[in-house]
Image (cartoon, rainbow, N blue to C red):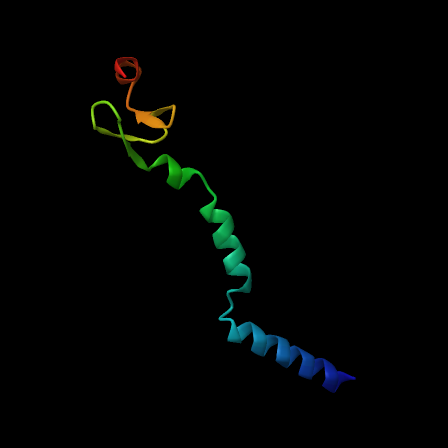
Length: 75
């Protein structure tokens, strides 16, 4: 019985090492990639004046990005 447990443990460890120990890390990376912190740092170009503004500060209207309410009203 003890020999079976040692063999199973060795096989599980070998499988874990084969995948580089990344079985749990891949799940954490995919969770972190869904975080909005990277999305808020993305720059978008204003459709009216062609300046770049941070996405979280931009205004999205009818499929276009605007840097301010002033540029939106000009469009």
